[in-house]
Image 1 (cartoon, rainbow, N blue to C red):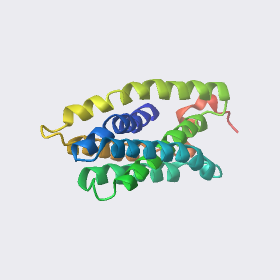
Image 2 (image 1 turned 90 degrees about the horizontal axis):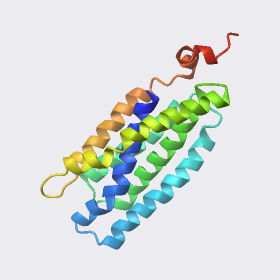
Image 3 (image 1 turned 60 degrees about the vertical axis):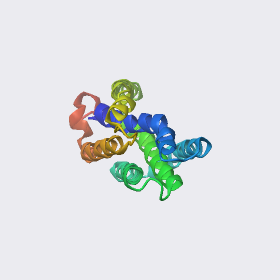
Length: 189
């Protein structure tokens, strides 16, 4: 579940950093301005990756924060699919906050599963290794879904669907059940 969710989220990131600027250029936006969208996305991604875990530190159940970041991604993908030119900088901010915040929260959730740091690190490595393999296909699928007229409508819809799938996966990340998932790593009280 962690691998699949991590892969879906990072597939969206890989597609956005690969195709966001060319997508907006195909809509007539100058290349400097479309590049600015990627820069803004990166700025908000990094900021959210630092701020959201700080805000979530008091909650052992991280699902609220994961859902918040996923909803932010969903809004961004739907907006660039349906109304891309209405507020492109705002859509980049939604995507950046959602993608960056979700990435850092996923790292924390993986570590939450196992109390022993060395074993938790192994789980995190497994999640990232498998997840990044899945994520590598994001830009490829996006270009395969690109319409003949250059539109990325289907590609952005595909990523919005992946966000919905990830919401379903992450809704199950209840910390009360982590001991059941890894019983050997949770001593009985």
